[in-house]
Image (cartoon, rainbow, N blue to C red; front, side, top):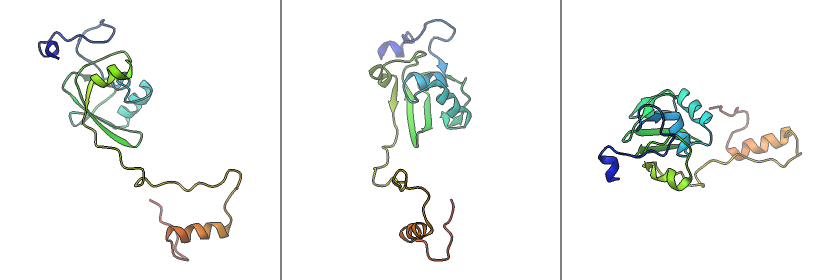
Length: 148
C-alpha cells in the first residue's frame, strides 16, 4: 500500500499500453469479478447501471485508484472504491484486494418476494385455480389484479 501512495504501483495486468494506473471501467468490473463476463459489464454500462463518482459512464471510461464505482447487477447495488487497477481477470483473493466494498448488505431472504411455483406438467391454471390464487393474494371478487 505504501508503494501505491508513492506512485510506483504495480498493476496486475498486461503492463503494456499507456496509463499504467488506469483501465476501462467494463474491463475492471469484469477483472475483479463483480460481473461474470465483460459483455455483462459493458451492457450494464450502456444501460446506465454503472456510475463512477456519481456520473453515468460508458464502457470505455477510464478508471483510476480512488474512484467510487456504483454497480446495479443481479438485483443488488454494489458500491466499491477502486484501490488497485487491474486489466486482466484475477482470482477471487486478489480481486478482493483491488477494491474496498462499501455495499449495503443484501436484503434478507424472507423479505424477497417469492414467485409462486406450479408443479411441472400441471399446465395452464383453470378458472377455479386462478380465482383461488387471486383470493390468496388478496384480490376481491370482480377486481382485476393491478399490474405494476
